[in-house]
Amino acid sequence: MLLAGCAASVEPPPPPPSELPEIPEEIRACLHMEGVEIPERGLDAGEVEKFWKSDRRILAALGRCGQRFILWYEQLRMNWR
Image (cartoon, rainbow, N blue to C red; front, top):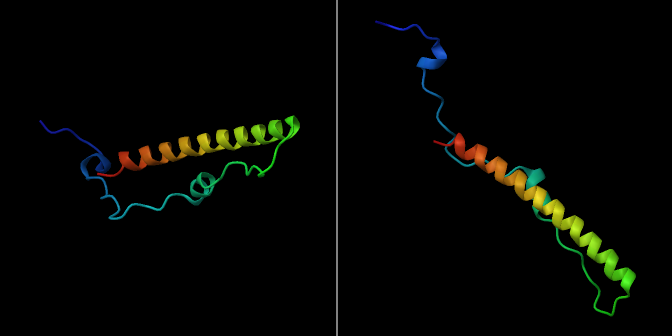
């Protein structure tokens, strides 16, 4: 007994590209962020707080960039066979 099907279910999927794609520029730029540059001198409490807050914001942004990179990479791997 033959079953009917559409062409998409019969044809093999297209082959993956022969080379890995470049990392998206938005992710690359985000991952190149650097921490706060702290001056080589004693700091008062207000400066310490300001630098700490800035550094935490950068750290959180880097974490989000890393998550976007992981999702991009996982999608790439799923289609790379």
